[in-house]
Image (cartoon, rainbow, N blue to C red; front, side, top):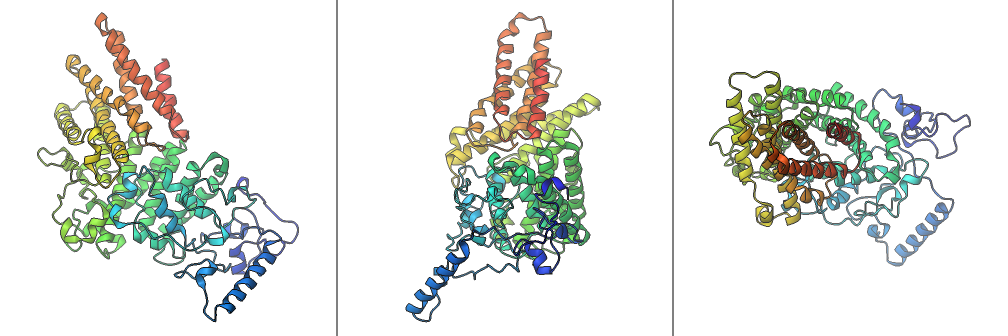
Amino acid sequence: MSSDVRTTSHHPKPLKRGESCLTCRKRKLRCDAARPVCGACSRSRQPIECFYEAPRARSDAPRSRISELERVVETTGAGSSRRVDQAGYGTASPPRNDPAQPDDPPHHISDMLADVYSSPFETASMTDGLSSIGEIPPSTDIPPYGCTASNINEDFPDCKWWEQQEFPPCFKHHLLQIFPRRLECSFILRLPRFQSRLRLPYSHPNAHHPALFNALFLLACIFSPPRLFLADQEPTFLTLTRQHLKSALDHTDRLIDFMIASCLLSWYLLARGRLMESKQTILSAARFAVGCGLHKISTRVRGTEGEDGASGLLGATTDGIDLGERTYVFWMVFSTDRFISMVTQTPSAFSDGEIETVWPVPLLYYLTQEAVSYLPRTTVTSLFARDSGATSVHLDSIFAMTLKSTTLLHRATRFVLDFQSDQPSDIWDEFDIIETAVASFIDSVPALENASDFIKQRSPESTKLLLAYLKTQAHTASAVLWNVTPDRDTSHGKCLSACRQVTEVIHELREGNLTWMVPILAWTTTVKVLNDEIAKLRAGSDANTAPALEEMEGHRLALIQAIRGLTPKVEFINILLNQIETAVDD
């Protein structure tokens, strides 16, 4: 652990009572009270969590004693019955103020997450088709560890946890609240199973692996308000994430969480501009997913032929939801790999032909096995097969729609790279296959003005944002394809039309509180296409090209301004923005 993330490296004087971390107290070890992870915990062979008690004011003890006496008097006056609700912990959960249990995550987190998901823009992958499950009833418990933060207010006006010299235990509470408000990286959160597992101590075999939590905390640091200064804690969470990932792999422990955490780590490294590290991380996760057979799940019905791909290292599925979760994990790895491959212009970990896993459907559907048995069993290759119907989005889950648009864009960009490096004899057959699939997908996506009729379970605003994203991805794929065709009379017009469609939906995307990098790859790719088209027009001698040239420069400016408006300004966005602005200056 590097010393720059600790507030104290050593204590020459004996520690005062209560200064050592809770873990060292439990294990009866000498603690140096280094922050945020003490020396004893950082040197542990097995990755463990390091917790400190929140600092208490001098008046807290007498006030606590007074409150206790008041409750005794009140209880005595009301008879011998105990009023647990009056104590603030709720009827379902006993008090949790025993410092000897530092590894238990706050039991109130799941209630907080339920409120987070009601934000105006719910990303497709986070809430995919699960609106009918319903919200968790409001908790009557007080927040754990004396935390006074509001469940739904991300500004945390009552709990100034970031101003304390050391993080109180409730900091996890806040980091988990920050994460789902900001991030879109194909991570499925809104599941009763996920919420129930949050209540379990980390040591429980059914609890989520610490690698997953630390990866969540790591990404939350990026998307936290600047005033929290959480960037200083990133080295700590990065170290812990890697330690726990290694531990999970060494002990073959909760491998689904291992793959999810690896994907989240890849997104973090990408955001920080560490492109090759990001690529290597997702490549390892993809190879592991293949080793687990997740790319061969060709059914949605447990116990039928095609489920064999979900066994192996992971063992047999326990129920339909378990099969659905494994399917979703594969597509999370797939989408992360395809995105990073396009950014780095490197081959994907998967070829289209080796993937048999069916497109994901809402996880709620897996509860009714008979219902999912009637759904089309299409996959990546079906998208490029004529008359397969796979390009239609009307029966798709939201996650599947976004996956298909990413697959089309990736296939188009790979075609261009192959076209530039080596032109095989069947290159134009490949062009026709991709162009037909892209055009069919575009025709299937409803117009933005029809958003309210497309997905009735979602607000028209969030549906319109989804449609704008799908159209941006698909029209960018079209622009990429027509940019490299030799027939200038036909290709230029179609390329310009596709670029025009991309810029027309910018307003919808910018109005949607889109803060991650979902549209930026399509936008930067379109800017590069426009740069090529503008250079071709300027190199020509036709005087009639002035109107087209002016229009393309206007589209390019609109896209660059949209990219500049993305927040937060992580290194990845700055790298891509610098690339396209340098090309424009040249």
